Image (cartoon, rainbow, N blue to C red):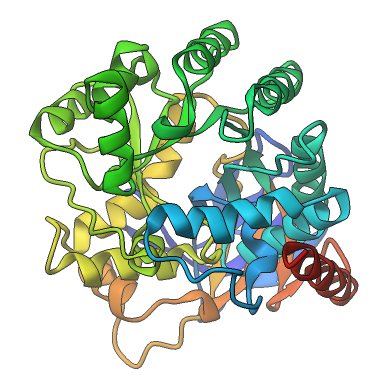
Length: 421
């Protein structure tokens, strides 16, 4: 049991402020309790939150652990001239080079970065074509070690041949037998009809959902129309992909009005990744006529969801229907996704304590202004995941951060060298 005394608690749904003491239960189903008198409380740990804000921790709607060791790497063998070549010469070169140690280093560093930025739950989309079997377990164990909950999938694709697609399907099924997870697909243009059908069969068998990149670039739409005489959302819809509340459609940039209507009337969730779209120069997200099931991700660019929310808001001023409230709603929508699908690990005992030294008054009425213009990950002081303190005074408590960073630096050099071979 953890006692947070002298807390200013912000209800993440209503934004109501409450001055209180909070008892935090440990465990995947642990609760929080607001109390007035702490004299008789016997808590194992006590954190004085005077002058700090306490609210629900954050969650990442779409991440790529496999990109963690890319920061600072050298230029690719060929300078990419379009989105397909960015995939071919950067990301598909990187993911083919990953091995067990590189995946573990990527997962540990990603988990630490997420935790220190206030996130206690991560939805990840993984690829390592030359180390598929057991890759999801490596990531899961790394996340568990740091103290994060997770919803993982392997990126099934036939771009490396049918044998690799088969391995991806097998890894997915093996993992889903004993873990909560999703069925990952790369994108329509690298998944043929047979692989798509088998992935949807797995979705139905394990009552799961598909996690897939959708129309990130116009290439995806052109390929779909040329090969299947339909657009990407129409193809996915014909296979039944959009019939699950657990399905996640990432990006959804280059979609037409008909596709928007299909998504709006489906059960699927859309995840926006603004900074990745800017980096790849593929276009701008617009929520127009997509419905309300829109959440935010990082697409592996970083692990800071507050930063993702700000990027969505500021860039969206010229291209989107976003405002203060909808930026916050997208930031928090992932919790609704996890709750309605009854995924474990995002209960009320997941909290973040913010040491937010605002020069102005903050209250329920102006919180959204502070959310956009003030609060950032530098203010994350402590993080509680499933009732356990995993970050205290801005330091990871569950693992040796310096040892992991040393390990990850060694693995990044191995990776970069391998990519140049």
